[in-house]
Image (cartoon, rainbow, N blue to C red; front, side, top):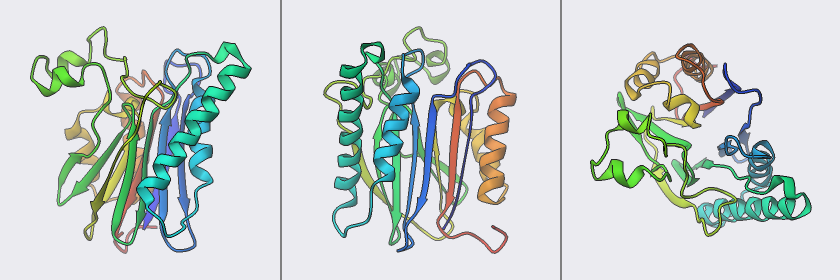
Length: 242
């Protein structure tokens, strides 16, 4: 497996409140995560870092990977609440969390918020996670279109996040096939690029570093109005990858 992550604060924001993790274990498994601190909230960077720190402490133990990921997210939730109690200025902080643990031909994932996990397989890009946003139900039933959602006044309201009361992560798993590629990203990527744009980059068959860097640069060129983070991982890289 090969993976590469990149992040940028963008052309508008003064601070990068995104965080990411790419960790390879001795057994050959790999842990990938992106976290996006709630924009405009005090301590968004603190919350995103709490998510990544909790995940970075995970170690394979032979148990359920889904349970381990959910436990790590819960731990980050407790850390965020404790920091808020200590420093009232951090009240309201939170973070998204999209995580994938890749091992033994499977990608086990956990997800909260509106960062995303995509699967690129045989020239088809599929969104694996569902955004936990106020507008998602309206998108699902066709009340609004994706284009309308981009400018809707409630487009940035999350229904779930790490730090939002009562939030539990979605979990699941994907059987990986030869040549599959995973993309984890924060909303700064897909709010600037159409899925067709992402698919075009993935079809280039570049290295994970080339594809992640190209996606990030294209999001910046399209406006870069938000922090942007992307991880690209190939389950069975070709000989051209480094």
